Image (cartoon, rainbow, N blue to C red; front, side, top):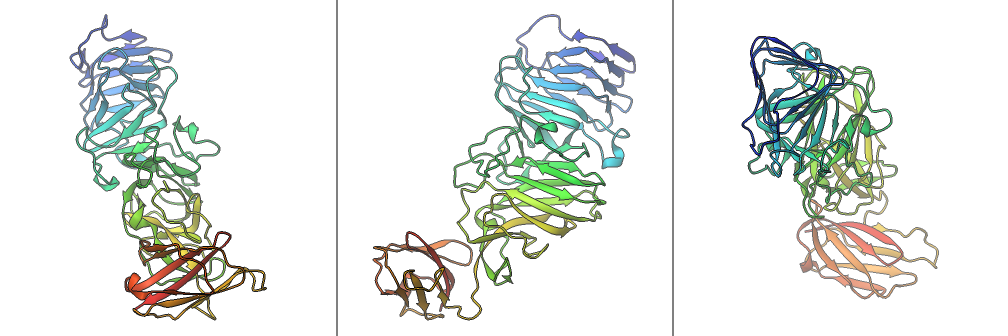
Length: 470
């Protein structure tokens, strides 16, 4: 049904008189009309929706259920506080649906209600569990909420996921996705993510490698209110194996009073955040020896204007199957340690760091692991106590060469040791289970040149030592 340059009031309606097997032959085509949907009304579209022309207006205070796809130009306007639901329970079953064009706030916060084709509430009930944003440069925004699994949907479809890319082969990294989904509600999260990301799948434990729905795969932009607060990024990549840095990669930015506009985020697998050799006091003395960006990835953020300012903190819950265990963790920004001293944690899951300011188009945030730095004796890692009933360990020399190094053990010995050796990039280069003897020799030929981190498991304790293999 085509509307051109008219004012149309829809109280309730069905844009086809009976169910048809056709896929996209029957459209709701607005080419310049002002169309109003009253509160309490539901309009069913058993085909595709087209919104085009500078005079095209969709003022939706009710509900529209769309069984096909949605298209628009970058001129039409959308207003109202109603709901659009993508649900293919009648036709187009077993097909993914997509949104193409500019159902978006065309600019930053100042464009809301001015040059604005965005949805208010968007519900996703596709029978395949996937809704794509198709077309290079496509942006689809919501000003209210997005519901990944609406209970009102017919046929109990699976929990949905938004993919910000065409239905063709998907990019390996977030930077390659050609569209953006936006949350243009500037209100901060005060209690539950379900306020704006309804029926999401955030995993508080961090490992979301099996998550296949309930988040934005690709790119997500979020409008930041001037008074600040918590702003979550429910985003990630295509789910993969438990050792892949894929699936949901939840993170959260917290702002005080600020001048940021709209922050866009995505996740980049295998993005290096190496900053070797830096010493910190977290609390005590540590040295960066493991860089999770290489094996895991980084969160990339940029502000739309590039001129926003204000300090902020970042918390991350990485899909952690690919991260090597470390003594202490901190968050890096742009391959540098910035932010607040002593802002470290014992786990990468739920790790936070404060005192950041600004985004550098985009800024890359990764997790880095630290081990002890011993100021008085860098060759030795003592036990928790040096009384005779506890085991102590001493390794020497450093640097060492092909002749190897010696491990001296004092105290009650376990039957065997479990030794792991990592290079500067966090890659495991050697592993062994030698018998525990008072003096153990490790051949130098077993280790590659460079700074190495040793982790020695005794069964009850874990010792750490760093040495330089020449």
